[in-house]
Image (cartoon, rainbow, N blue to C red; front, top):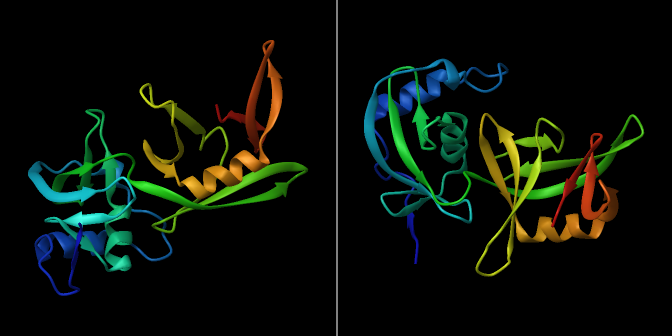
Length: 194
């Protein structure tokens, strides 16, 4: 059972939070976390669960504005680890599956081509494309699919079950290199769902 953290509970230091808030410039897009290289401060007792819930010291963070703030300073480095990064601090956190969850998809058309537009649990929006590919991992033990979409800079969103069912309803078979593949099209790309 996950505890819910009250709104006024302790979070990382006020210095860290102030630095994170200061890094976000309204109307300027996401902070340039790829440019920041402060020393590692250590491991922060923060975890993003498989279902996309952000936890601090075992308690769910129930302030969506705070989760959104943290999501904008999240980075995955070459070592495969996830970090919250500001210009002055860098903290390693745990991510169970993917840092985000795709909670909605909408099919549209752009220049005569179908597009699949995804929304994540933290408010990011992306269109499946060569820049934002969809991939599916198959669990070798259960044969259960785990679908993901690339959001930005090595960060992915796990596609929720209900959204994956929507994609399956939109899918069709396509012959690729003599093989019949079941998948969806978006922005001129075909993505296998099998």
